[in-house]
Image 1 (cartoon, one colour):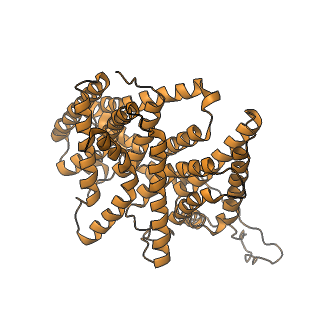
Image 2 (cartoon, rainbow, N blue to C red; image 1 turned 180 degrees about the horizontal axis):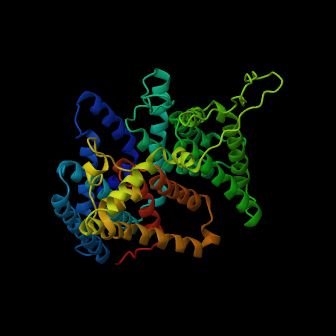
Image 3 (cartoon, rainbow, N blue to C red; image 1 turned 90 degrees about the vertical axis):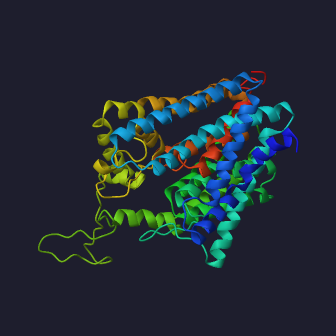
Amino acid sequence: MNYKKILMLLVAFIALQPVIDVLTTASIFVVDTSITVGVLIRAAYMVALLLVLLWASKKSKISRIFTIYLVGLAVLLTANILVNLQVKDPYYLFQELKFFNKVIYFHIVLLGLMIVYRELKARDYDISGKTTKFFWLSGMIIGIVFIVAQITGTSLSNYSHTKVGFTGWFYAGNEIGAIMAIVLPIMALYGVEKTNSWKKPWAWIPFVLLSLGMLALGTKVGYGGIIIVLLSVLIGSLIMLFVMKKKTANVKSNLLISAVLTVILAVITPATPVYENMFAHLGSFGINFGDAVERPGEEAPVEGEPGFEPEQPVITNDQVQNLIFSSREKYKEVMKNDFYSSPISQQLFGMGFAGNYEPQLPGKTPKMIEMDFHDWFYSFGFIGFIYLMAPFVYFAGKYLIHFIRNLKTHFTYFYVLYGVGFLLGIGIAYTAGHVLTAPAVSIYLAAILAMLVVKENLIKSKS
């Protein structure tokens, strides 16, 4: 097998993600172990990218810079371990290393895929077209799995009680929800690129298929992702049509299709699991819409009788935050207090996995905040957080500046929807987590950023 084919397989690996996740679910139920099929395969993929990076560093300056960065990251992780061995008691080394692996996975895949994409581009490989194809295949597999799981009654439940939702044959509800939200814009991209007549909307069927799976999840991430993608196509089409004067059949057709789908989503919303779950969440606060107002000395009138006045519930700011963050804000405050009362060495290099276990939650299992950027900060401290964020901010910022400077030529469905996919990933990482600390999800985000950076020549081919 030649070098180019190896590089092509490393990109094609994206399409296999849902298959790996289904196999992971099977291995969890068959063998009760934390070392699953997914862990082994993704670890092997990470090693393969590291080998490509090291191989390329023999002749490439940028590859050597990336390699030096990863060596520096290893030094910081070592410092984190040495600091916390002195402070944390008990210290769960396996849990700490497992968490570190999840975090650095994004960085290794991002830097490794940049080199892979650059090498392939130099060999006339269509990196953007193939990436779109593999994302589309991944989305199709996920959508089909959800449908088959629902039809056969074998879908896993997303919630243990009160709320309603299903995860198909995928074990981690938060992770598959984030994956679907990141992939959905690319499914929409496939639809808009293949549609030139509103009478032939067949290319949008994969988008609808994946959207049905996202609605079945019953999560705010799933529902919000569909709304954001549809509005992106709708508003983007309006801008192209009336501002940029692109009055093509493609733009007109997709404007109409996205508008119709948005209306359909609005109409069916009351029948969706997320709608029921929102009211269940409010009910946990003791808030029940439509309850009659009771007055002292009076019997509360029944609905439909004279004098019935539905109670107007008052939702506090804390309850709004809880509704949005699902109690993550409480763990954030606990972790924040823990961090700023910790020794200066921990503030500089981080408290590691789940902070200082015992002071945080005495007698309970160590738990992360599940808001990725906050988890990065408290786990790796001021120095570690800045180091982790550096390549992410540098390349994302460089691409954003490039996009703005070339807005007239780059305001197309391709760039808009890939941008939406990336921003959805970042938004979910900040609010719901399980993106930058979950290899099964972070690979998608890394692939989007790496492909866009290389496609736009933001790292030079000869560097």
